[in-house]
Length: 171
Image (cartoon, rainbow, N blue to C red; front, top):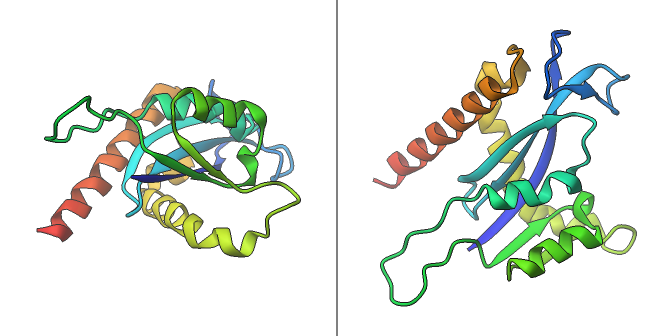
């Protein structure tokens, strides 16, 4: 199983809350960010919400730990995490690579200043498509809640609905 990871900044109303912070790309307006891990088909495995000023690499381990165990009917020890992770240049830090090594996950992280971003886009579009699926839900596009737990619950619900839609397509 191959997973991809991405962070996305989100616009907010001027309400505040504990999961908001000054957005570095939007003139310091308060905002939040969705961190998501998806599988090869774009089905969300884990998603978290942080403030917009939290760097992607600092939330990397929390998102990895949020992946639910994979249950497969086979012999041996059941696999709990994916075998390989594709990530963009925002995760090219030693702490991210060490976190993957501790969890016995192969890393495919684009290197800052070395790798061209042309070839990596063939893996990244899956994450971007999943983020666009998430932002079809108006409640996630703009942060209406004052408490981050409510927004996280809506994010989890949207991920479940995306999984349900993908299952319906298969049947």
